[in-house]
Image: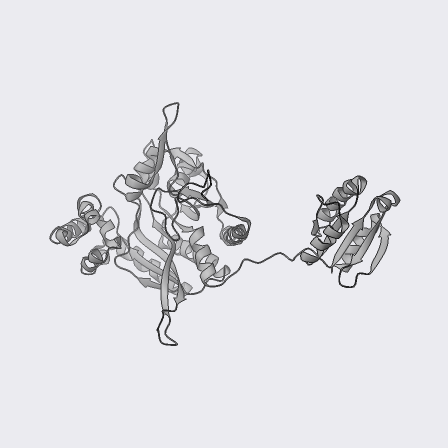
Length: 437
């Protein structure tokens, strides 16, 4: 039976079991990012539409097809944020962070929104964490971002992590490369998909990232960005690779790697996890590996200048973002479970109104002592409460009846043997602390 109300298409509830994964990832991000000097930032879910259309690029799929945008009653044009970098740079400019010591290193964790066809690992409301390093040039900052991302994934115990890198050049050398690329694709336009035929004029670099098989065949022979870099971009990329070598990170060159947002330039990268995917009839010892994109990033030196109302100096910046749902999917494929808290060993059972009131107070005392307890305050039957304690696996049930509540006493029941003893209520927390060691 279809319910009257369901979550919107492509948006999902995050239930308690899934929340454990979210918390594990959040805690790993917080610990590693803050060790490397990144500070938490929260930006609004809603931003002015022009922030994204100008910052991300009018010809990108995100701006043309995927933004949730609307006009408010006051006439403002707002968009639910599709990504985090433009918002962080807006916050950097608006809050005068230019005067702070550089680099400004920030991290975030939250929901983002894109209107696209829902599929495995792809939602219309999805969660990401991101890192941004603003205001300092040099390939060392690009390498640091990759290092932090890799450290987070290793802390989560993900296996088979792979990094793909490329340089897409800067405003100095990319126009020439773009011209060469357009000429190459124009001569083969009839073999491209409809989207890529449109991209020849609007955004030819995005053709390199097309997943259509017929386009991939054309892309394999396309001119490569690294063959057309200016001296500065070539040196910058060389240094980036040297840092990755020193860190012994598992990277490979992908000459066709581009990012889907226009603000990127120079070094870009993507991070993948691979998991064994045994095919039917496949020989033993030769499992196939399925590659899952977890996220990526790169350098975006001109974005602050592009978004500023006054003439800004170039603000060298670099950053990256990773999908939380995608990481969770990779963790599940690798059979990595979030750590579970130890089950409470104590169950509080009560009988009567006075005992209920005393039990609430007693629960607060256990909370202050950091001793987890279970309860069934809505039930009055002792048999039902003992049954609930047994199902929960409690080792001890504390029984507080009307008579015990009046005397200031409480009964400890040992669930494995059924033996019981009575103690002063004032001493019960201390007593249970000893028993639960």
